[in-house]
Length: 146
Image 1 (cartoon, one colour):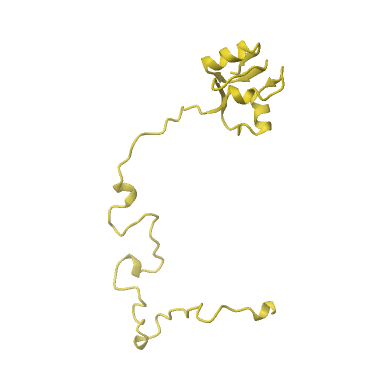
Image 2 (image 1 turned 180 degrees about the vertical axis):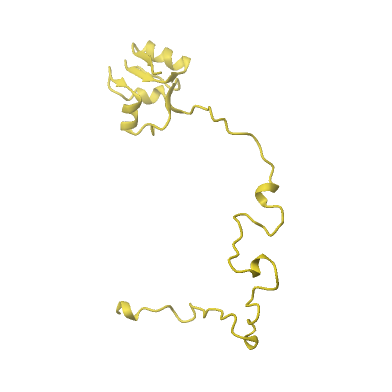
């Protein structure tokens, strides 16, 4: 079989509707566009979400809440994940991003879920009270990044 011999399967294609070819065709005169109105005119294009004058779905559905533009998002890492690092390692957001633990799009917050027995220097934007206590109890250091 050659590329030039390829063609659709029998019955897979349909001939285009030939409009505006006289009254005998059944698609003459208005060419299937109907009489008057937007859709009959040339160059008609409905706006996105336009439903022919009916109240659009977007406007029928009730709105709730608002978006706080001052919201600060945090990447969350638990203390148990930090316990996998070697002793005396300096754990920074860049290191965690490099290891694939966080995506690095937002600030870093350390939470106190799990246990840690390895002394680490942890640099993050925020710490929970329990996380701070556990890191210090393991003879580690806590540094808050501005």
